Image 1 (cartoon, helix red, strand yellow):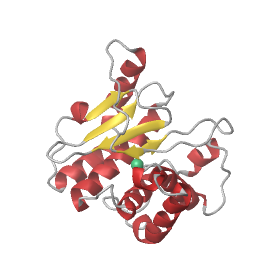
Image 2 (image 1 turned 90 degrees about the vertical axis):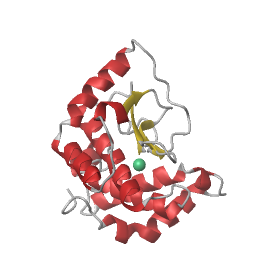
Image 3 (image 1 turned 90 degrees about the horizontal axis):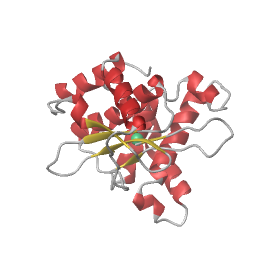
Image 4 (image 1 turned 180 degrees about the vertical axis):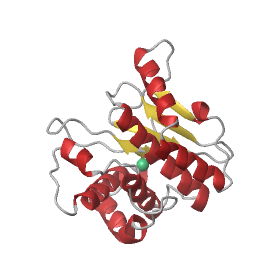
Length: 214
Ligand SMILES: [Zn+2]
């Protein structure tokens, strides 16, 4: 999942979660849902999203009709999106409605969730294993564009030469800390940070299916 970024200085940065814990609310005749769907439909044809969908299908995992497996929903509070996979069922990607996102952020969120879908297809990741979870969050943050220099400046994180890497680490830690396994520990943030550190180099430089970091 991906966390939503507020405007700088308004509240803590949010992150994404997996296997959406709060059932998404999908209502009819809702302007926020309609707007989300319009941006989703446009995002589906953007090159980075198309590339990810083709890469997943190239591994032999069938996703089906994008408008069906990518669903707009009202997610709880800080979530920008989510990825849900259950045994015997097709994976579902959620995009949060009503969070004030523009087209570019919807495309980044969708790419982030598709990296999880790619990892699920390629390596059967288990979200119950914090190192698996940390690895896919590192890759999703690095490859989605959410840690591009301009995105960090918009968050009020003024760039240093290693800002992209710092952003990936920070956002991966936020997402892993929301894993129920982590949340049960005395210090979820420290547990998440340790998991992210343990796999960081290996996963940050694993840019598949992209040739290199964007
Ligand atoms: Zn994620």
